[in-house]
Length: 370
Ligand SMILES: Nc1ncnc2c1ncn2[C@@H]1O[C@H](COP(=O)(O)OP(=O)(O)OP(=O)(O)O)[C@@H](O)[C@H]1O
Ligand SMILES: [Mg+2]
Image (cartoon, rainbow, N blue to C red; front, side):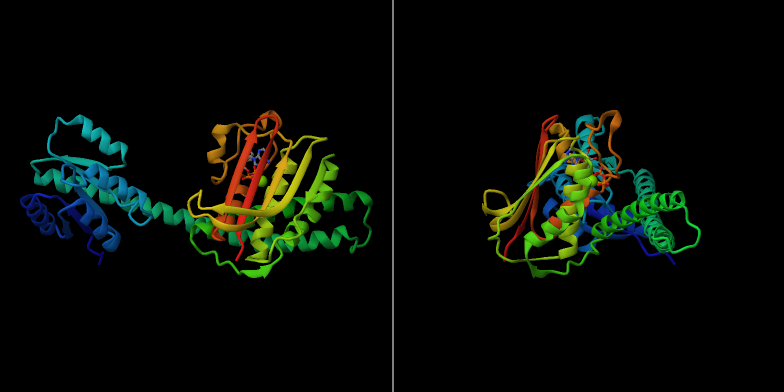
């Protein structure tokens, strides 16, 4: 048997609450009531109803204000809301309600059939949406997991071939194998990125923090990428502050973040450009929310193509790529910076970016020391 669906009815007028309660209970819903916006917020965070019916005109916190708060809270963000307006001609408040993310509206006096029809249709839609989200998530994680193991086999075989472990290998075959191997590694990288982002989103990332030397991680990443910079004809400058105190971080994750920033700088900087990597201690005095004390910081600054200011707020979104590449835009997936941001923020740190189109870009990451 299907679980009873829970509806939270919110109205400061007691008569109305009693009416809603009776009409909905009669149809088999589990009904909870609240007589103010504040009460609605606590109830909905605690009981997580399947639907909220929310009166617009209430003293203190009105329906609009309440809806705004509901939409800002991670826990209540996705609960569908039906607005209850006193006047069917009040087009303005209806419009305002939709703009704030209301899903439907009803007008007083409440008409029983209409109420039940709206409630049922909203519940149907929201259930279908949840199912689609779940299917998407399941499908993605299944696909990604299942792609990984056969690909490792392919990579293993290609590696043997490339090393000349099989008989009768012409140089041409070896070159072909090297190309196949390079692409297989690219594909594995992509699969791992998708998995990482999915894990961060599902809250399933556990950092394994150890005390370590920030400079060592940076040097490791620089070491792996300096050939790439040289091949592109870029000057790579490393300027480290040797006095950064040891701090606690997840070595692999920070390595990944540093690598992503560095590879972007190399990727988005044309020939003869310069990439500068700088480490130092950065101090915050509470001038920015949540940032206080000393941080191990790294700048990755390039003289590349840059990005327009209006792109900057979005570049950390999944699959987002700025419109600066032009026809020769460099290939990528748009997951690199998503991972950087998640990793750094999971450490209690922050990512900053400054960029001027045609001049260059500077990314800064800062993670707390101690
Ligand atoms: N140093 C940079 N200079 C100019 N643009 C940049 C720089 N770093 C990032 N960008 C812009 O931000 C976008 C997002 O970067 P991100 O690293 O997330 O994705 P990507 O490099 O395109 O792909 P991926 O890293 O997943 O292979 C890039 O596509 C590019 O438009
Ligand atoms: Mg990238």
